[in-house]
Length: 93
Image 1 (cartoon, rainbow, N blue to C red):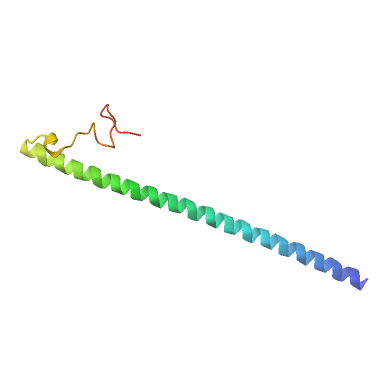
Image 2: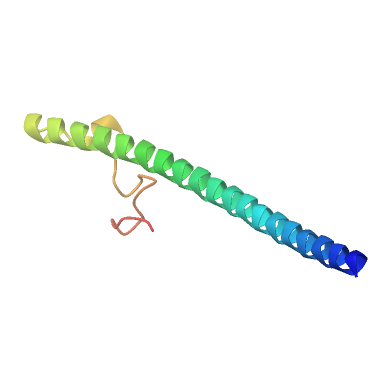
């Protein structure tokens, strides 16, 4: 009788240990996925920051040239040729 109770207790504890191990592995998997998503979003933000800097420089040149009455072609800028704009003068997707 004592042996049966000890065996039952041992099996219960092993099941509890397996369940805790599965929870730990699920938490680790979630942390890896979250870290990867965060890395991807940080890269996207950095790309957008670079695009904005380029757009800001182009805008500054355009405003200065309009104020002076200088053609943008003097600076080699054409929004149709800009990588952010398609051939129809609309923003590229």
